[in-house]
Image (cartoon, rainbow, N blue to C red; front, side):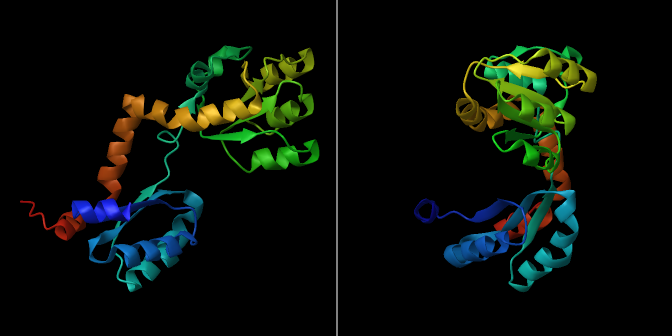
Length: 229
């Protein structure tokens, strides 16, 4: 990366997914490596939980290090999500129940491979999740449903029993059955979810609005030497 930047004689705006104060070290190192090519940083996907500490601690600290904050873009559930229906299309799955809930949004994917006594606590830590779980793990399936997961993805083309189906229907949680194993599904989602989001016009427009609202273009243009009338 650095060699390419030097060859192109490029200026750099660093965009980082902000997940806590530990990211500060990465930003400081980037400034050190890039020297005068480094224009500043945009903190992206700042969650509501981290917003206060971002403004109270991270931003003042970086500014004291002569690092310009060119934008602070909040996490947005619409931009960072896909619908259950889109998810099913990606995986070539079969929807077993709750077809009227396929427009519900999934933000995170969790793999249900732990002991059942830890499952509910694990699932509840992450909102709007879809749980990828073996079709033979009824105990984990129940835990995911009870914790309020958006949907279940049952792998290995194994179908749930009547009890699981009944609970899922009561809780309005769709169940998808796919042919691949858990590892294969996880890898596919890792590769395809971002590409799917970028095809969605509404999400692209939402992202553009977020950028326009939360990036300091006046400062950015000044750093670039662009005179905007």
